[in-house]
Image 1 (cartoon, helix red, strand yellow):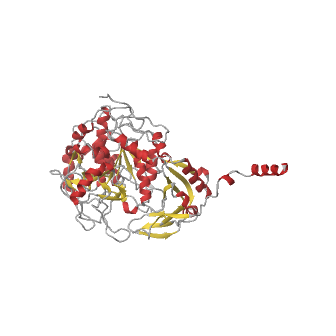
Image 2 (image 1 turned 30 degrees about the vertical axis):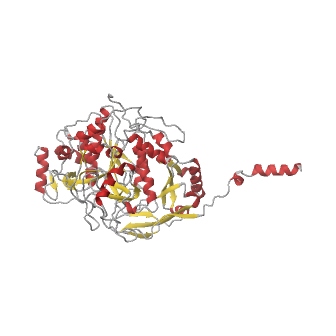
Image 3 (image 1 turned 180 degrees about the vertical axis):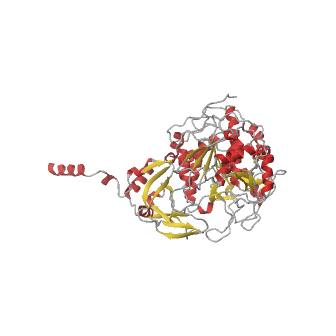
Length: 623
């Protein structure tokens, strides 16, 4: 009997206990995560990528305390929360006070997945032969990034069939699959995997510049500058919108920023669009003649995921964003985040990256980030898988919890174009990421007396995100006014778009020393971002925290600092679109900013302690 026990002991010693304690995981028991019934419109298949092609996979893990993150976002964004309990490792959600923004580490604690999730997903990746050195946690620990994955490996892991796809209308080639699956055991742990079924190529939210009537537009620039210097201007007609007019209309003209050492405005650029310092200098020469010398207005460039920057090949969108952010917020420092092509390349070469995930991940890993971010690129929500959209939206919530105001354009095609859904039914087409409830969507207006809705202003209701509680009162009032018109063409329970608006027609910009007029909510977005940055400057100077996530304030007391737009509409999809009405509407949101009123509205007494997040580096005198 003694020898039998000895043999058993030797056997147990030589055999990993895991073989007994943990059953084999059925990695081959797959269930579809997302699929398209057909190749999305305008895309054609080019065949399989060449052997040896690799991609980086981004795996969005289910956050262990996502609800706690959203609670924290709402609390630090709402003046009603003036008490502060420091974040601990306790599983119960902590309480925060308004303006006590979370640090990078505090946010990471809330979005970090359950340890079992990380262990299980990592085991799955390793099961498919991926080297440990290729696996890392990113985005505050909420994502698992797997680099240099062979397409053949990705196909096996995801039950996918990655192909090369080319867009029929533009020179765009991407690597995607129309369907992917996950092991049944992982569905409760993974929100989404990218790149997979997300086919949309990010586009700028502006109309193509129109080029006529040179003399009239040149006269406008010279009158504005008062310098008589020659300038070549191409436009559709004499333009009506310059920075001086915007500063007068939105009442920022008299304000002089004083917290430039503690306040920063970030601008993101995609699609290989580069800003030009020479064009910015010319722009400031003509439209901010008080800045002397005009070359004082400048910007710094941070390269997110690209190796080169060519200022001699400026892009219209990049110049619009930098020029209007600078003109509105000077001398606030401007950082231009060059995110490159990511989704597609001008050369047509396939690019396997992901613009949103890589760009937001770049910001979230930094300790110090701008208080205001302007991004002028978007896509149709219907082209974005819902699981992917939700995972990206949580990244914006992380920024908001850290005290960042994110501004996004609402779109330039009214309620939509090419309005058939996947089943062929007519449906209004909202924009993403504007439909994410954790950022501020900017619509468009035109004219001055009165200011009215611009017909191109994107607006409507999300099909991916339900209406956030902060919109309940304002949006419900509009829906009651709307009645049954367009019933079935939109989701009345969805997040309403936009939140705010500004001038979006015939804004002048300079590209390669040539003045052009452009239209689009990508014009209104940097304008609003500049105004928000000025408000942050004012608050920081007076010892207050920056505004952070704007929407809680805008839909409570902030509307008192906005100009209600009550005329105009946003036609599309063969309809007249929605109409601007008193109060909130899906054309201009709550209205356009009145800087002086917003100064008074947002200057409130503070209580409690300061947070560790996006606070100014140096505090001003507290009142």
